[in-house]
Length: 221
Ligand code: MG
Image (cartoon, rainbow, N blue to C red; front, side, top):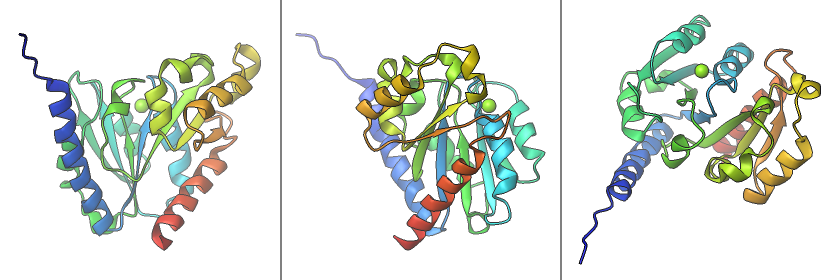
């Protein structure tokens, strides 16, 4: 008889425990947090760079930047004058709760209202690891194709918001907005969807409004 140890499950159980600790830590300091996920190049960093200046008069913001290599994104976000902590995963294709746990100890959490986490660019693994945040957000750029929801269902089912980015390119690519919206809703009927262009700025206000609504909900709840 073959005896099998499922290492993957143990790893995820341990991750869940640390995520729960992170959640408790963030809540007790009144920090609202988002985990932003997408494939590489979908526009996570651009979204942060475009929207953070619209939020800094209301919230004290910190960012955790996850990257396989390089500090480029952290430098782009750090140029906004906010606190940025870089996690270089050295080849690991996702952030996990213990990486976030260490990063949280680098911040003075009492001086932060909103923590934005940019995950490693990947449509699969980041969805499997709860970081202990309030909500997960995913970006899908329309250049990636409208067939992605059904191909990467976990990412869509775990996310509270789907941002369809690069909407300014709609006339140049064969992307069926209705199909993508329908497939995302089939997987996750509760998912919110915002169409946006980081390049033109269209939809950025819908995104910052969405964040503000969630923050006031969490403060009143
Ligand atoms: Mg980036």
